[in-house]
Image (tube, rainbow, N blue to C red):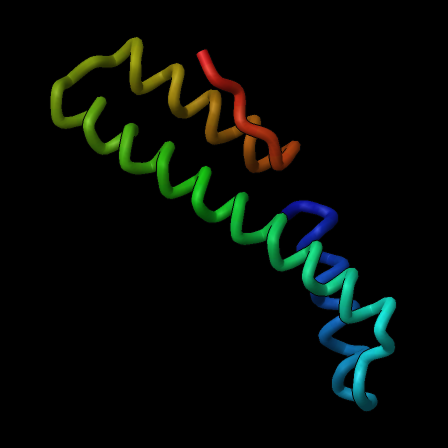
Length: 80
């Protein structure tokens, strides 16, 4: 889980108490964008992983698995 996911949970809890301040609303938008980017990147890599497995390309599969692990830990994509 990335720090942005923790922050989203915190902002959600604040929202349960009442309307968000403008500052928190802006932060929420930034967190949602970061989460959307993360999801799109992970889906892209997952689709590549499926193709690697279908073609039985073990080297490609290992590369993609490493990229997915890096993305899970850092939130950043490594392009090769």
